[in-house]
Image 1 (cartoon, one colour):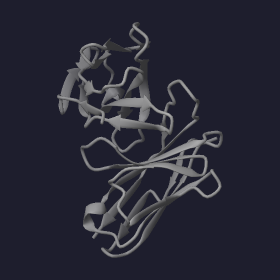
Image 2 (cartoon, chains in turn cyan, purple):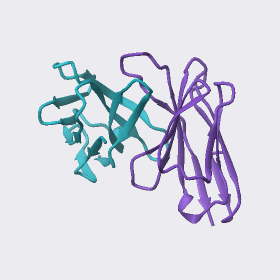
Image 3 (cartoon, one colour):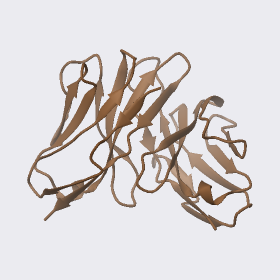
Image 4 (cartoon, one colour):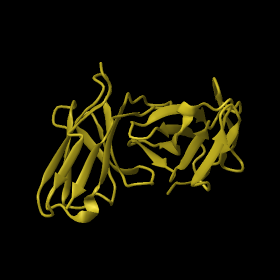
Length: 116
Length: 116
């Protein structure tokens, strides 16, 4: 079974600074996908960024980028120029694909607070 | 299309009562997922449908839980004889399933259940 670990339950960052959230996972699969989802307080979860395991290039979406280390099974999220609206729970998620369906496994989350 | 819709948003019930939640996915999405999320935790997979077929169920889904997607469109999640441990946020997500490639989940706002 796949597991996802986020070792930082809470983090804070000053507005305009850069912060990195950690994620490690355990799998025996070779083909899979990794995601970061954001859940603002009392709001629904939205996709931040995704990475295909077969791609060596790290994904980037505006101020959000990842550092994907496949051998180390590490998938960290870097948020540059942090904004107050980035305050949220951040979940790292793993998705494998098999013949019968797909299933996401989420980590426990990191609560990020952006301070003015 | 207004995204994934879940109803009711909040439900308070007494222990032993039955509750039903409804999820209306994005219309062109053929895959639908139910997750349970407790406070401060990541979502836990409950079950997954491709069209009307329920393809995967977690062992978290006890006999008191049943999910249906009768016409491959909306889905219902019913909990019978509720227990206080069932108190949680129940999240629905949908995706457009492709044989390969990352199927990004779009989440609803969730249905919060409180069992007294």
